[in-house]
Length: 258
Image 1 (cartoon, rainbow, N blue to C red):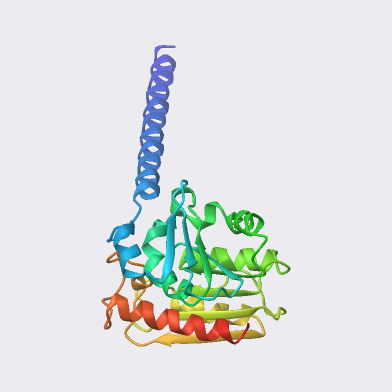
Image 2 (image 1 turned 180 degrees about the vertical axis):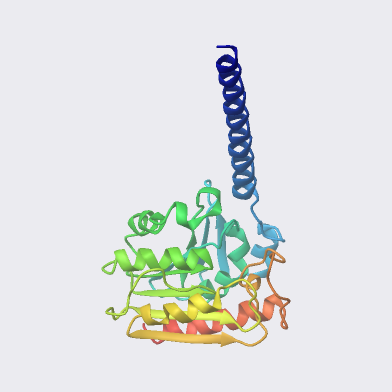
């Protein structure tokens, strides 16, 4: 009888230890996830600095943290909107230098503020922007890294609303091989973050109207203006050069579809 009680007592202690260990693991996991979600990478310069540098565009910070970049009075409007999904944990203002170059040529650009700056958490954010701007006749959706993957999903689900898809250092997460959707892919040959094997594998999912550009010396991070990114390689060109080349490719591609 005593041995049975001792055995039950030992089992109870073991169960309690296991519960404590599991609780600690869950707590630590929650802390790590929380730190990752809140560890956003903001732009390295202020919006005021960008407004002064890119005076050919009207740069507005929205109350919710999103960014709206519109052509100024000196640029003829293309009646075309570009919705841009940020890369994981990167704040919208970091993409002002890239997209301002498009707005200076007449394109209206919108960077929604996403929960924790994670496009995957709000894949339908583009729909809100489209509904808020009925005056815009043509829409393209774009994104960097995770934002590009999420943008491809929105394009696949909304073929009647989107006229084209632009992916920077990304690949589609949906099979669009039977679609005629115009797709543009841009990445750098020194990119140390993008999964090249998966990129190659997903080539079979690209639409019939797919175009690819590889920028020599470009890395993963420099499409935005937020500094270095873990696991990325050093770029062999400046951030300004990478953003200019990217914008030039995008502009040429867009003009072919006007």
